[in-house]
Length: 314
Image 1 (tube, rainbow, N blue to C red):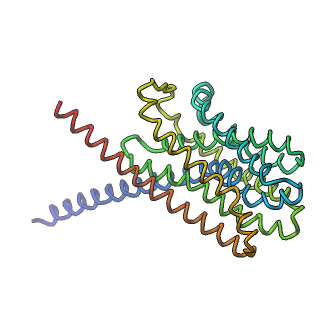
Image 2 (image 1 turned 30 degrees about the horizontal axis):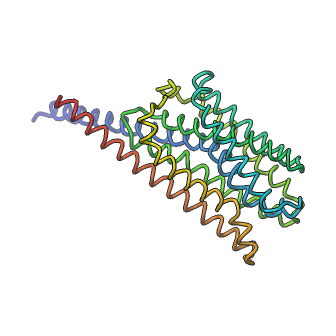
Image 3 (image 1 turned 180 degrees about the vertical axis):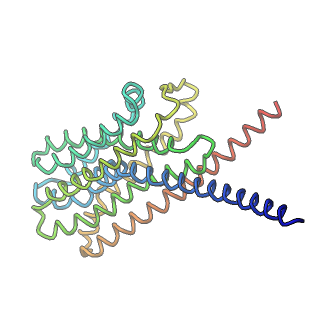
């Protein structure tokens, strides 16, 4: 090979290598951008579940002692929150179809933050009951549509990546649990009468995260499949056992999460032990969420391949 041919071959090889390098780095840059968007959206999950629902377990004991509630009244507030969530979940698809996923997600996020702050100003049980209902409905809009936006970040052809991004989004609820576990015990060191400051702290953290979620939601394309799905009788019957089972699971875990801190304190656990328990719970939920969603993404990919193979044979 002459020197000229050698130089030409070296140049072509270097050029091709540079193209591969740029392509790989471009994909990495795109992946990191998607991860950042999912994490920014996860602030919605943190507010909707980590703050609005689960953090109530940390604030229930001081609220109950300061306001003179029975355990029935304390549990009724989370029942109100759950009822509001069901209503919100039932109308989410219709509202998103009418006003757009990102817009409704951000509206729900904003209302949820406002409810956290208003909760700090209320002492009457009836007022708190109404706030918990409204907060449940707004958090349903936030959490459900946030998951839809997270799934729409990357193309449909990447189910495993979509599963990972949705997992990162849902893990925001666990991050909210950890943040609440870090802030509320410090606030309550000043006495049970400081429970309103706990709600204020949660509301301010949520408000601080709102701009990031706002920017992320505006950078995600509108999810496909905006029509409202209506089940016929046969489809509903097929889903009925799953619905019943999930309802029983929800009843158990919501009851557990509502009263577990009160139970630990009644059994004589120290503040440090309660905080450690709460942090372990949050960390376990993060790992479980990410692993399960990655697995679901992999299963979706396998199903897509099987469907494609069936279409080719047909």
